[in-house]
Image (cartoon, rainbow, N blue to C red; front, side):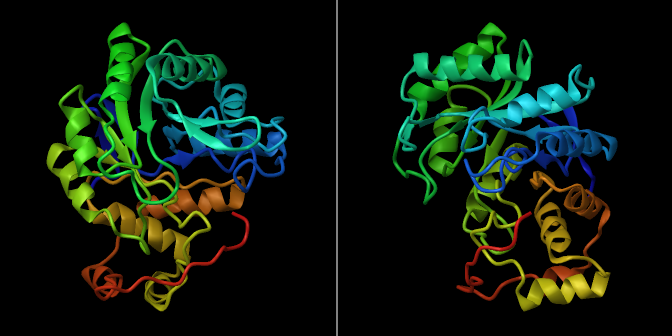
Length: 300
């Protein structure tokens, strides 16, 4: 299976990318991390062949002093010609720490313009419309009005490609009737496989399936016996096997593991060159109804 994917038919990217959420802080809107370390991680990621970075203007430390988009701009601008930066819009964080959603074109335009400004670009490569919170996707909720607003900005030239995040197959079909969908980003990994139907729909349409929290995100335990067994067989780590499994799951899956650690960055990117055998894939198939117990792992 190829290590590359042609996003939207025109952007050739490495299937192992990088998620920027953990650069400013290890826990969402938590204590700030050292910004120079974040910049070093970004530079090293590009040196290792990463040319797909996933970010958002709302990825920042709790005190607001360290922001993912600013780190990306400071570390990598002028950007390499082949670098693809994906961002997402939709969530609105209130002054009291609460979360609401952008529901109209004006709010979404403001968020798109914020990403353009903070990244220092004239056009965004890929913009996801994120809907819902952190639980199951909001089944039955229409995305039409919001997606139409983003599609209009795409026609203006502010956005190159459009994506969806935290959605179901109904949302995908609704959005595709409005404008091309290039990528879908849902919560999916080796220990959470609820969205196989959505993945199948993406594969059929050659739409990138780009799971957020590909290593569990601190919400799931990936260290079960099955993954550990395969890791031992390859002399690899559990996260490496989880990433290799994700890439082996479909030719349209992309991995965007995030870290604020240079050592973990090296470990994650090395997973892109791993090949799982049929025996490995059989060992990594969970029995029906099985789900490893959740826990919060150490800092990554």
